[in-house]
Figure (cartoon, rainbow, N blue to C red):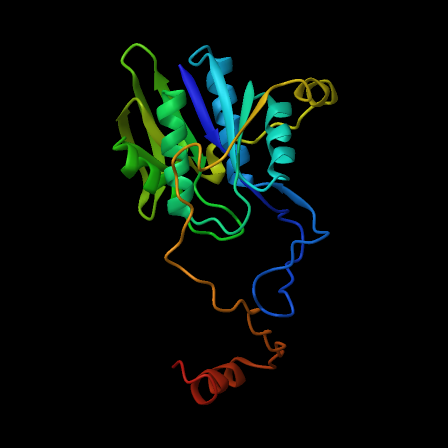
Length: 251
């Protein structure tokens, strides 16, 4: 079985986000970029499935500008067998990504498509659900545990919901999106980083996949959240109750 993993290049989680002066978006020039943390978890799970003998190949896919190749190289250094880069500069939205992934799935024919549940830059949490709908495949979102049965061609997914854990049984092929508690991604070792340089990355364009990149949305303005007021220390419970009643008006 082949596993396809979608990975995204985002601003590193440790970087302080700055809004552009014209408020058209966030500053990405001279900013450290890295693989989306949820995508790292998805890739790690694919590698563990392969190492358990339940898959033969892990293919990493990234859609974005030329710099996305660096993110793919990171995925190859972690252990992916090969990469596919769909070069698409400019703004990309979940439906466009889902259509591109559907086209790649029809070419590659994987038995499992893994994605992070969301990207930390836009927090959309939509691509996995959309691509599952386009493919008409079963889906398991927010996965905290994945167990494959190769003989029955079934994936059992524990997913986190508000009330606790929900367990789903999915017929393969299927789409699974990963949550934080699924695993702890590995670090790429120096030998694997060197090996990744010789692993193949296929370049392709949306036009070659017969996918039109367009959006029904327009970002009008991006602004920083208002700064919080400084807190105050109260001397007694009575003073706290007074402020909650007369100033905050919550009691």
